[in-house]
Image (cartoon, rainbow, N blue to C red):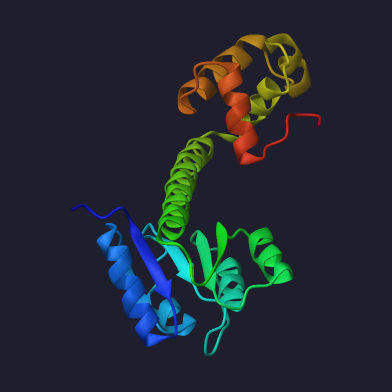
Length: 207
């Protein structure tokens, strides 16, 4: 059976950790289990896809503190909290910080599996978006300074004649740079460039 995806399990109760590991493995998950948040942080590789099944009360860092540590590192996998000590303020706080779900022990098997599948789907989607953004950033970095100026004029909706006047260059030069911008950015249209600019958080010229 091919694994559905990797689940990092952080649970300090030895018996529960082993039982949960067996349960998840029976559903096709690849499980990496840890007794503390510190053990997890020591082994966690952000480059590897996966999600985190996290107890709330742990020796050392609590589940919420571990969530915050990962956030500060910019390396937060999708998190599903599983705890016997749930309360509304804590669950709301965890969800606002990006947790996928907040489950109470004992949890129904189907509910747990469904939550982890959602978390892994989120991880796949996020990583795909990050890869796409990295490719767009690389293309934009390949533009010359003048091409970036023309790029800004294009996404502002200006015609070649208007861009030429603003930049103090010939209209035919703007056309040449415009063609190169579209080619380097691998864009089929101005609309494509606008979407890329939004992803890169670039402002149109004059805005």
